[in-house]
Length: 127
Image (cartoon, rainbow, N blue to C red; front, side, top):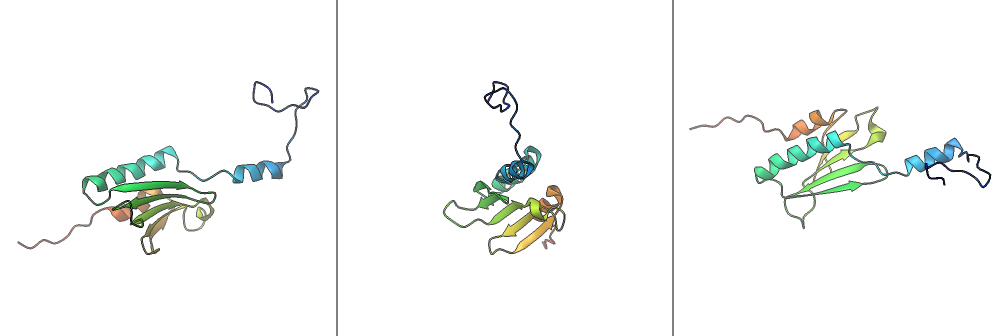
């Protein structure tokens, strides 16, 4: 490798990598949340911590999906998982919210709309 980051053989000419190998290397990278997506998720997390609903979280970057799990207590199973699965982006949407039992609460193409499942609903209060 040269100082500029390119690859060269011993004679100074560039080494070409077949396209299928380059794609395979790119596919081995784990899926991650983008900065704006993580910002939306952490805002929601902050609100729920302030409401004393959630207390801990974990982020997993797997090869096929990224998962943000929220917990009431660290030793428990996650209450909810916010999942980003790029393979489903063209079909049902890349984002989904999964409850503790594995039931998908909401799925969609836009993270903000999917996170809307956590918005509190207006309730009738009798005096």
